[in-house]
Amino acid sequence: MNIPESVSRETFSPIRKNISHEYIRGLITGEGCFSFCSVPNIDKSGNRIKVKIPTFALIMHERDTALVTAVRDYLKIDKKLYHYGPYRNDGVKRGGTIRLVIRDFGTLKNIIIPLFYDKLIGYKAEQFEIWLNKIGEDPDVAKGYELLYRLHKKGYFRENPKFVS
Image (tube, rainbow, N blue to C red):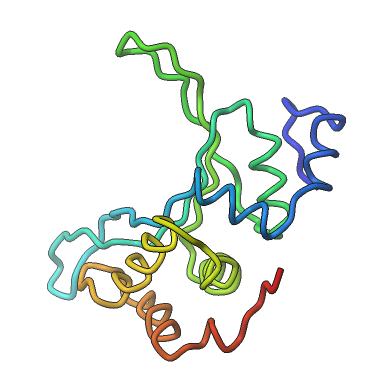
């Protein structure tokens, strides 16, 4: 298990054993985001364009590094965490953030979408549905990701639930 040097094993262990799929869904309802990031690309004509990549992110204050690490490890996601900040150039004292950012097709298809599919409530459920639809309907979304939309529309994630709890 990859525990950051700044996190003691005593802090990490109780967090890890209390993580569950339901806990993660609740955490994401408040702290998660389903959105897109823009990346530069070249079209068939050689023109520079920006494409959108579907993105899932969990962003928390750096004091919650152990929690974000526990979520990542519980879901068996082999992505690194990003630490940003602290930013203080506007006169407001803020701490840094720790971020789990998922953009790769395989992790979105096999872990992120099945974990949250038909399992969120409130605005986050609406945001998730809008995000899934935009993946297939927005022409600026990178090619290949539209399969996520097609699977969604054909009922694949509903018919093949991966995370029951």
